[in-house]
Length: 485
Image (cartoon, helix red, strand yellow):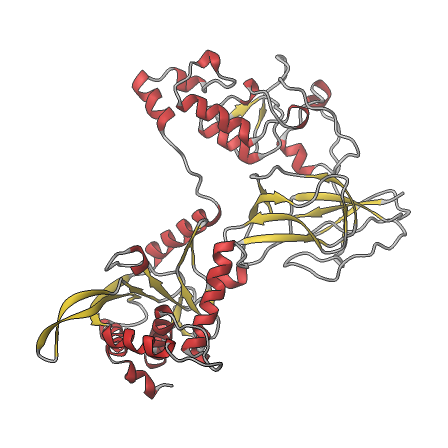
């Protein structure tokens, strides 16, 4: 008999505790090879393809596309080889091999928190309860999360029996009680609660009547379009019915966006920054005409020895590393527990990038050891990966200073929020022609506004002002950089 191994969502690193299933890469019945990617998930940091450390036949999948799973929750089961053991085991991170005598070939590759050589632990089985005996077609979320996969699942009916007893949804508010329904996704249940959709009134479009996210969203759209309650496949919660007409309209027209994934991670980090960091901002206008001329000269060099074009952002990044070498106070972090300022020896330069998934901050490692061309090439690589959703968690964390070029949005100035736990962020506005006094005469010059938000615990205004003034001097006279090259 083959061994059936349960592969659980591994720890993806950087303190991440959950991930959303974006796309399944395998179907039940598919044969998978060792280390073959089986599912694409989105975390608060990046999009990640998760490989299965075992080879065999996929016997079950857990979770619909769009649903969120916590680390350690079952992803899928794989029938492997012909091991002789009758019981099955699960490793502490990914699901281990069965406890029979047969050896299971597996990968040596691991993600954080799981590996094929992990100690074997018993997998829990779900015993029949009064609820499952009365309504065998219904699969409560708690049972799905805890149960080992069965070789064949009971069919799920399209409507809940009228006599079924209600069951509390794990993670729901105390007053959110639903009967057993054909839903396995916690995300679908949460979406229904937020919009007043009674899942017991929905007919699922999934296999065996399973209620999918699309079913709930369809019911929500019908509510928002003002369709009559009788024509819907879902009805509002009782408290919504008793509201006044104006209150009901306002409730139906409101659009709720869950703070999860990248948006949720950004919200948490920005809120923490505002709570913990006593920040201050200073700014200055600078004449960037000479910087633009220097860039044009760099990029006009032809011949086989010419490298890739150098961007304005790459030049500003190189200026930042030179400024941080002079003012190391701003390349630091604050250890609250030890009440110490920790000055960091390497500059891991983050830069803000807007993508379809939201704002992300890729990090150029060891920027202090790179020249403008090397920094530019790495920025280009990371930007392309960010737009394609291929950045790894390691490429999005560990920054020590952030450069934010909001000039690409056509604005001149801003007071950026520090990227916690860093100590400062430099903001760069658009570079535009403006009247400027140059060599005693009024002229049209390329002017940019620079703003520095800094943690007032790590330095005083004199240090911050000196840092920003050095940046402006390098922008106005790029030759100043020659001293540090």
